[in-house]
Image 1 (cartoon, rainbow, N blue to C red):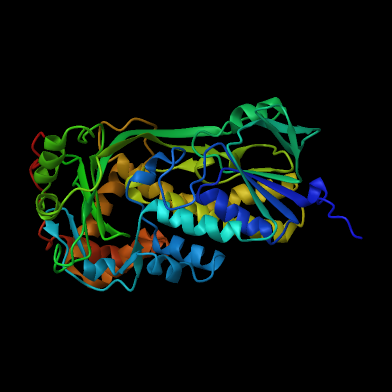
Image 2 (image 1 turned 135 degrees about the horizontal axis):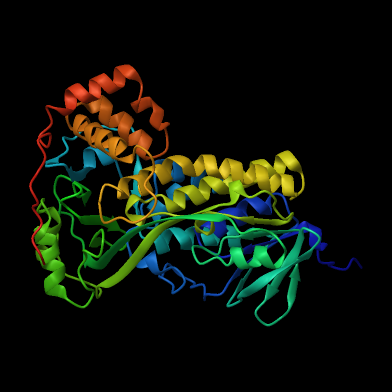
Length: 457
């Protein structure tokens, strides 16, 4: 009789965190390790319910086109599964009311197909896919206290109860609150430098019953402010269960309190487009309102460290946490997980050299979305942090791009592809394109700017 002998520690990978980053990492590792153990301190629900460890799970989840493509490559058939579970496909250029810089943008095709769903639905679907892999094990309600290792090599994790779980690779997907700084210091390594951009973003979300005639000519509504005068944002997304997810928020503390329904309605009415306020007035609420605050963009620069331990990598929000209004976090986690697979294939073992290469590739992945998020947030003078050189000029040009996109469908198509990480931002800086943008931006409805339009709630 052959005994079931557990795989050797070096053929075991441990993933800390069962969010989207951890699930994507586990999927990649399952093809390369005999055993993958996913740890999470939280209870993992059996259905598509929000969970305590993902506070933003109650709010709007935007998966950029690059992220949708990456998840589809990691999990074949996932898009069809989400649609079958109630996700709504839509084309953002023709099926979304998008308001910014004084105008509803004219409808024009972008060539991009998106899905609208709740984050718990996505996480439930992906977790089910990972749990079905025969060599993946989930352990819920388990917290990690530190790393085990010596002589520059991580050999496992130390759990809160003092037990050690040996492994050949630890992938830290524990999120923004990762304790990697302390863990690395305990092993004799330097902690990564941190860049922080304080934005004080907050938003409040409530779900409403959705009917087929609620929004006759569109699938979703997105109202963005024109900084620096406007700070408020509104989002209405169709999600599974025939519901509207409506989020109202803003920069630098400008969002309604969860317990104040009058403030919620007033905030919606203060937006420069009436679409979201109309939905709130017409539709029946099915949940109480909940709030979420996000103090700052935060990026840990692992790519700049002089040395790395073998057997340990950080991924997802444990490396970079973005202003969630830009919807970049899940996409970057999926792209970083694919990079993890490429680096493991190139090196064959989780060496210190692999870590250095992985963090360099991660820095390349993060460069564009970080520039959009942290750079765009500096359009507000209240934003705190080290301002990148030339940021005022870049933000003025970004405004010109968006004004030109209102007037020219081709510029809008390219701009949308760049925002969704399908094209590099350099395509918008080519000389002929710059001249075209500067010329057309003068014709857009919002070209002359707008006086402050938001009233206090």
